Image 1: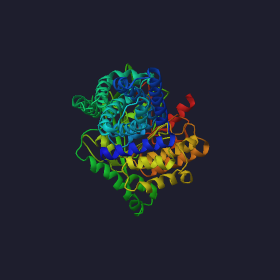
Image 2 (image 1 turned 90 degrees about the vertical axis):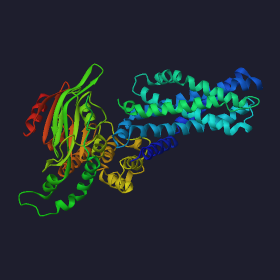
Image 3 (image 1 turned 180 degrees about the horizontal axis):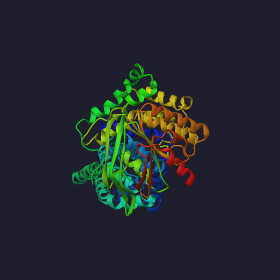
Image 4 (image 1 turned 180 degrees about the vertical axis):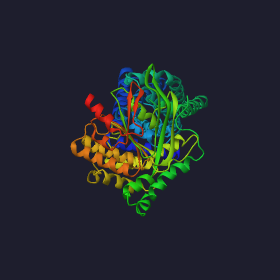
Length: 224
Length: 287
């Protein structure tokens, strides 16, 4: 069976489980929403301040929400022993990882679809003229977040203090991605808006490096 | 370190051979039988099966030795009862055989064959990727998704194993474990016995030639234990190689053709070629 076919089966299983339990998306969405709303009331930013600090607040909300969402991705499989069932099947370890990355990407992207318009209203940031370019930045940043995050979720699932371990491992690794995503978003919200190609290339490079690294180490990641 | 099951050129042909030969079994069993053997026995000795060899297998977790130099040849069609106290290394040995855990040292080798012909291939045996298609495992934990239905669980694994007709495989699996009427029931609502039956159906979906069982009878009621015994007896008559870790009082051990006792990660006793019952009796009297 091809890796893509196996990954699509794992993705289908993840989506079905989430549709049935609604555990991940609900909690993630509420958490990120609370962060954005609280920052909005705490700082009461002017339009100029929103353009300057808003992208940082937005990506920090995504980052925290992502780490909250990524933890159960492997922890649930570990607790139920179902990761063994997947590993018993004649599919590559990378297919399992890829299926989970795709599912996490869909969940976080779905949360972003709801959160970004709320952010635009609360922080008085017009997005209409830059929407397509913003989607590109969000997609690249989210891909990097879930690629690295899924890898570290697999690592931390084996540890005893797994709830604490994931953010401790993940957040320092994601610091470069956060800087690049914030800078690229800030350039889009500036007056006049622009697509900062240097940061876009950085985001693409981050995604490619982590995807390649996860492909190289996937067998070791999923073994006990 | 030598990794599990590496090597031979005939990987796909070996994997397909198992399924193809299984499909041929009814024809074999309907052939004229000698007066001295039942048709079930004839089909058992002719059925395709898988041999597994552990060659000085060692498994370490940090400084802890779970397995120490295990050398063991399990022949096609054998039913091996794996015994030993807690922490003896039974589960680790089964996980190594299932390719879930890589040995720190030594190697595991799979060879296609049948009870009558013995191991068919020589050399490095069947590669790990192909061997996975022929191995099934039932663990103490059912390895099922609690929030999916019985049918959804089986469908997922039927597709992952690449069954030609997943729907038919699922229907057959649910029928065989007596859960056809609960196909759309969420697994979370199932009893321990029902989950274990479904777990065995999942492990048998792809008709494995080697079945690994890790204390499958734990927590089962009398009815479920009887069902497990009947299922294992049927699999044995079909020639499936089985390695089952269990305690000495397990009724399923009556089906075993060989007993292996582990202690402290070492192979302490092996009844190869001899009746395993005296060892079972001795262990029962010691407990």
